[in-house]
Length: 285
Image (cartoon, rainbow, N blue to C red):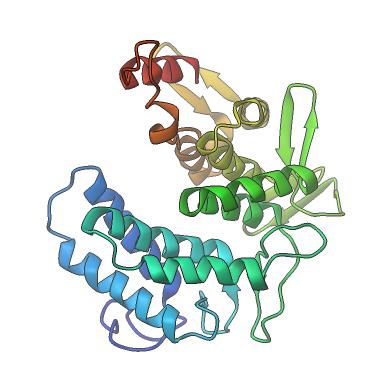
């Protein structure tokens, strides 16, 4: 509606439509990686070719989410992930673009005060203020795209926006503010400065990068704040009855295990023993 044209019908055009087509391409990639059939293969290729072409034609390889020109870097993570997943399915096609884009992020859009990747970029290529929700999603996206970059950003997140108290930890929505209560369109209800979305997204980075202590503390907070209830065959956050996507996001983040690193361990005889490792991991977490 904002672009006043259909994203799929105008793939040959130049308008960004980045958020829509990147998430769609990412979903199709995961459908194929999970063993789906080939019904979306042609569309998948068109979407990724379009993202690649438009990124290379832009000033700094970033594309706006809306016609107002504002670039949301967490949205761009899905563009990078979509291209990376396509490469893992079909062989290297877009890696040069991904590499160039990540190098550009490192050079241009790391905030000097925090070392965190910027949340937003405006038309004049200035960065917006740090956000817990966006930083949490940025960090998890980078963990999947570039593990070393992701590890660096997780440490910066811990240094600047993650607060720990006993066996609990949470992500602050604001760098310097801690309002008793406010509402943010992306973070949700912010209570005492704590970001529900940022905390949930950070679980993904902690899980993928194997920071199990942080992961457990974040999950403890999620259980407390989310009103976690357990039955014999289910687990449910009561808060999800109001914030419907929260439970889905938390499930996605807490299962974002890097099995290539976590499970392919050798036993004392030098044999790979992935099954037992995975079983222990699932039983514990």
